[in-house]
Amino acid sequence: MSFPKTRLRRLRYNPILRNLVSETSVSVNDLIYPIFVCEGENIKKEISSMPGQFQLSIDNAVELCKTAVIKGVKSILLFGIPAEKDEHGHLACSDSSIVQRAIKSIKKECENILLIADICNCEYTTHGHCGTIIDGDVDNDSTLETLAAQSVSLAKAGADIIAPSDMMDGRVGIIRTALDNAGFEKIPILSYAVKYSSAFYGPFRDAADSSPTFGDRKTYQMNPANTNEAIREAEQDVFEGADMLMVKPALSYLDVISKVKQNFDLPLVAYNVSGEYAMVKAAATNNWIDEQKIIMEIMTSIKRAGADIIITYHALEVADILNKNK
Ligand code: PBG
Image 1 (tube, protein in one colour):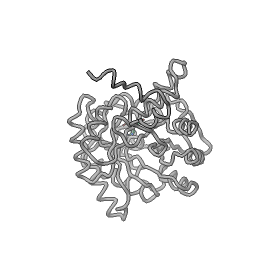
Image 2 (cartoon, helix red, strand yellow):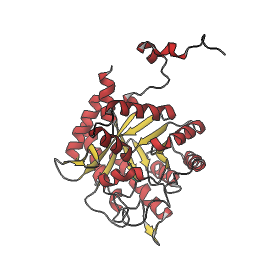
Image 3 (spheres, rainbow, N blue to C red):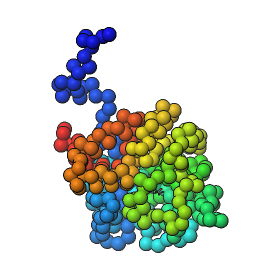
Image 4 (cartoon, rainbow, N blue to C red):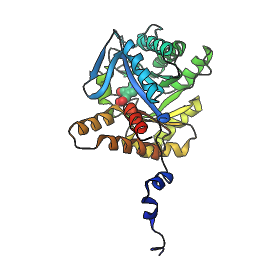
């Protein structure tokens, strides 16, 4: 027995030493902040299930982006709430659609910002599903066409990264080809490669007005019980040309993050989703938890599991905490 020569507590007494031997760190450079952009002017409507997050008209989205950049959060993920919807989500592909216009305005007024465009039809379809419905189900191959057109349109608007979240088979390859053919071979694809069919997306669907009006997303999003399938999903996307991979949600899927990281060398993103955020906010409002400490413990756990980058609604709060402790 090595005790008492080995005393693991020795490295824990001095806070500077604790920091020195820390195996995991969280930096503002690791964070992506998701925002919701809507039509209109001077709109800032709080999302009731996501306190502190808002539906923002473009003018206010620009201001929020400026604030984020000042805090050091320079990567923004954009979701759109269009004024109109249709069966196929065609509006998502229009150069004058909400996210396209938001990207142009933000790029004009903010320097030093990275804009990531979420690619999916669910915010743009009347039925709320992520693609075109044929025989009561989302039709994979016809949905690929709108996803490719949406990607090119968003790249044209100035998106720096294209991030498909729809979970159709073959979308990364189709989008890669479409981007290349349109002259956007330098624009990377961040694939929501491993996206589970999760109840943790509930508050997001309030925020983005994207709940399916019938059925659920189980025929395209993954079964939470599976991890071998996560590897197959990631493998397929890497094969089709993905530049970065994502696991989503994060907290109930830390094992999946770890497994994907062990199997692939691509930068790995974890999405700390709306339901995870809402639970922290609800508990904090009741003073049941120390919110700032909980937020940092959550961020650390996601990085410790193997994520390189975290998409989180807490991004600005994390930046404030990190900047305060500098
Ligand atoms: C669009 C999309 C969703 C989220 C990101 N992109 C919702 C869904 O798949 O139903 C969820 C994000 C969150 O919960 O924070 N498909």
